[in-house]
Image (cartoon, one colour):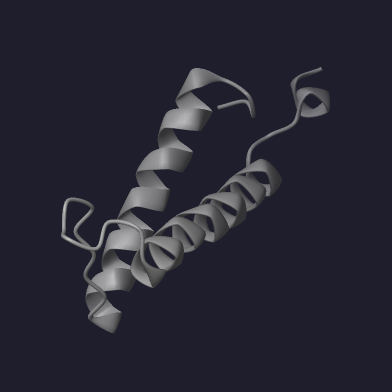
Length: 72
């Protein structure tokens, strides 16, 4: 799995989804996008948590994934 490939992107999104869902469930955080207060602090928390977790997962996967130099 090389960084930048479709498999890499799919795996990073899947791991991000699982980590965010588990984290939100553990903290008791619930946000419904189609609620009355569509744009609120909860939306900001939700988007920021996704962004932070996605960035960390991609960083860690890039460190773990073999680089092009190891193929030669």
